Image (cartoon, one colour):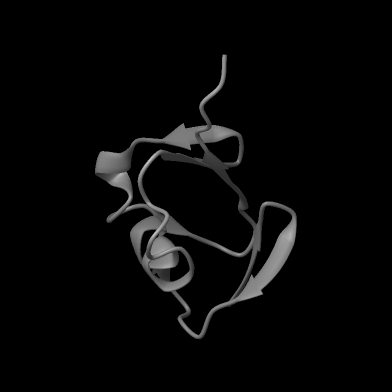
Length: 68
């Protein structure tokens, strides 16, 4: 499966992938302080394990930053 994440195509061997698995495979150490949106809709962290994405989805992963 090939997914469009943050405007980059990333290939996954799985044919069905949850947001949590996607993050575990490609961002294992960067899961704190992030938000995930699929098709411009923010997905609650409590739903990451069960929300399955498809190739047609537009996925955006946003990292929180500090500033003032």
